[in-house]
Length: 411
Ligand code: ADP
Image (tube, rainbow, N blue to C red; front, side, top):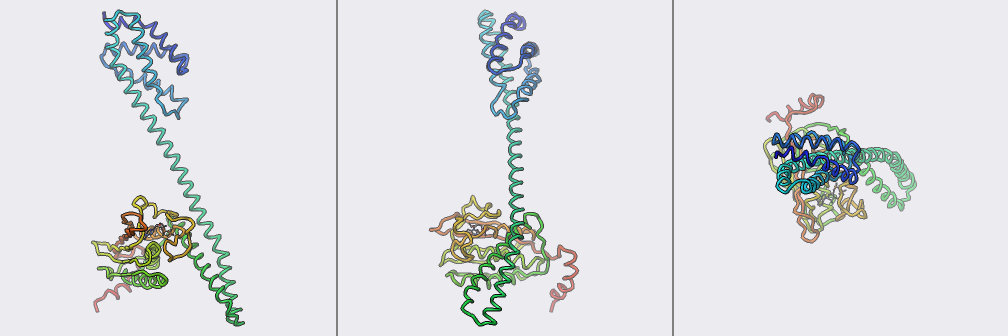
């Protein structure tokens, strides 16, 4: 007997059992009986055509109907339904048909069941991908919002701190003028120096906060001018030796081939960037260590490296440290000193440095085997800067072009 006729014999019992079981188990809607009728017809059609694809539309409709009210559900909804249908089909066929007829029905139903489960899994997968993407997007939006509030907070706090800081500096200087210079009370000098160095450090932090918020908002503008990297590194060398006066560190500044060539850049900002890198090398290298500034010339670029024999940086933090407040140190160490070993800081130096280098069209990255305060693997910061023969800023170009021509004229 053809399978179609066998199916007609089990149809009523099959629909009744499936609807009872599923209505009870998954609370599906009343019109499910109509849907089961539809399934049954397509089942027969699939057997006739020997193609289970005709089920796809029905599976999609069922999936849409079931997920409509339950979009957040992570578990599969359709697969348990097809499992139940398969079990009931085995039961009904073995009860109402003789064994060879039942085997025939089940043999024809198996590829349909497999196809249905495959389709359901693929729909589930797509649904889960959509759900996870929506969650990731939501989380990203929340993070962006948080980052924006952080950036806004930094900008507002920095500007709010500037006013009282200016007052402190002004009054300290008036005290100095009146008490020390006019009245000769020099004993107060020590306290005034304390106020002076404290407010100077605070001003540096406030300026860093302003810089970081400029970089965050893509507002960092460079004063393009002719610069010579070797000159900038000479200043870095000079300042670093003063900075390290209380520390026993060796500083080696090698001559970088190509650094004597004129390029366009913002000298003040580049100095700030290299100053930050050397200050960090000083801070994260214990006494007895060495800091080396070196580099090489590459086609169209110059690479500067700042290496130290310090505590190193875990590879998993090589990106994090360039993010604002990416400081990895203990909060208790923060701002204890600019030069003391592991002196800590607000964690703005590297994001600013990265912002400056990137504004020049360059790149910065760190290489370090890892963090180890005993073995001291050290870190090397690489700065890659393009050599610019043309000034990117038209106004500055007009200003500097005649000067550059004079400087570059052969003697
Ligand atoms: P901070 O103010 O904390 O020094 P930075 O942005 O300059 O902020 O540096 C971020 C973090 O990167 C530091 O807290 C430190 O953990 C790590 N770091 C930076 N430079 C070095 C270095 N040369 N050696 C080891 N760790 C470093």
